[in-house]
Image (cartoon, rainbow, N blue to C red; front, top):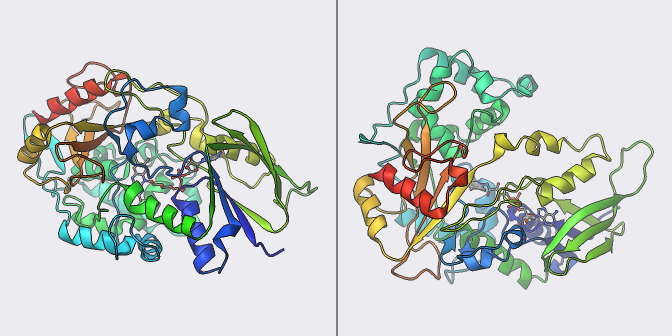
Length: 449
Ligand SMILES: Cc1cc2nc3c(=O)[nH]c(=O)nc-3n(C[C@H](O)[C@H](O)[C@H](O)COP(=O)(O)OP(=O)(O)OC[C@H]3O[C@@H](n4cnc5c(N)ncnc54)[C@H](O)[C@@H]3O)c2cc1C
């Protein structure tokens, strides 16, 4: 049956993109597309903290301090790899720059503010490290080359193999500038999959020769919500698409099939997160249901200046829906692989809003570069890994300012993260995941000093 309507579960970048192509390439009416979603930003968010406080998971853990901004990511684009994203953004007008497409907006901004990171790695007592010396030995090189050259048909040999296991005969690699930059540029941990590392190596192969300056990194003018998501949302609303927010889809009902070989959704159940009521929708034969089956931020919780983020061990909205579906069909993947082991995937990030530019100016002085150029990662001065090695403690992205259209001239917004949230701070003696915003700021200042 040819589909003429679509129900999108989630309004993240993937589903918004699907809607644009259905309209522009499939010649659908926007009116035929309805989004049911908890929010309209997904992982590509960026807003005032007070707006984020209304999000579903934040409602369970109210914030006392809702001043400042939330930028849950220091997103990096890469034109040579992000061909599809730039094609998508070329099709829609910018939300902030009149007369430009969203792609032209980014091209124009990025050309005027090219990335050339001069302080990619820093270490207490040493300052900026010469990261261009990658530090790989021959065994590291051999293993990396084997990984990259592995034919696609052999990739399943890497099933269930973590990065730590893959490099078990050369743990030296984890103490090289190459690894410090790779793990923090792409958020890889030792528990992450070697398969995923192989795929990223293919995708980002261009960055090998320039990783210490990140010159291949392209950035949007503002945060990803205003520079990527908002243009898409504005365009889709103009086309007549329907956005039904504050809905958590909890269950799909399927047409019964004896062989489990046909996956046809007949009904969707959801919770209205404002009223807590259950709502149901019948799905007819002409309607396609499109679902993004994993989201890394939909169960994220927020802390504030004086309160650590509450830990939420629940399966996220996307993960639990995927689980509900995969229990009925043998061929829909294994969500537990991605979500059951929290320690393998958890991480902590923070957004720091200041009321003056003192910290920004100091970072500019210490890193010898203007805001907007860098991903600065701070190396530990002592061994901190279970292998007895040094590693990166924390990273920051100092965006070009302003990072939000509503940011006041006296305000600075900085984003940072801890790749291993259970490790302890060097200046605040507790695990990062237990720190308040104030303690994270103290840890950052300690690293900079
Ligand atoms: C900190 C961070 C940094 C990143 N950095 C980069 C980067 O530098 N470059 C890059 O390319 N990518 C980066 N990413 C990844 C990128 O943001 C994601 O790959 C992308 O946003 C995924 O889009 P998506 O639409 O698939 O999912 P999401 O953006 O996660 O959107 C899913 C949407 O569905 C909603 N939803 C989920 N389940 C349900 C449900 N059951 N019912 C209703 N709604 C539901 C969610 O609320 C959300 O709105 C980063 C991600 C993070 C978190």
